[in-house]
Picture 1 (cartoon, helix red, strand yellow):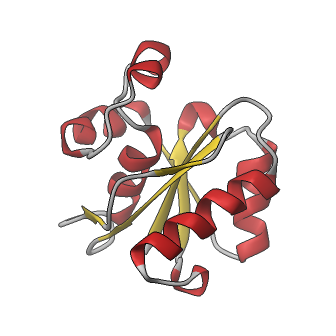
Picture 2: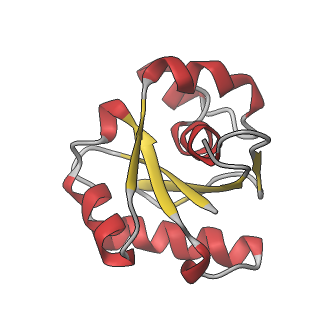
Length: 126
């Protein structure tokens, strides 16, 4: 299972982990089931994202913009604010789908806090 992440600039690892906990609770799974954390290449430098992955002891998958664009039509959530800012309907959902690989599917819509979003996806891997 992959946790796709989106966040505002300088979102803390604690806030990102809150979003992740809310997402796993909503999906009826656990944080222990997360095999990787994924985000967009333009969010990969965020310290909070990197720290959240390290806290869980899982790899951070950086998804190229072209791959995110390719799955944008498969996202559940459509955020006008995100679309205007980065041209994607949902960074978290797109990143989760890309990193989950072949036959990827979202476990539900992304979950949001004030500064972070998390979406969960499963698939057959890269």
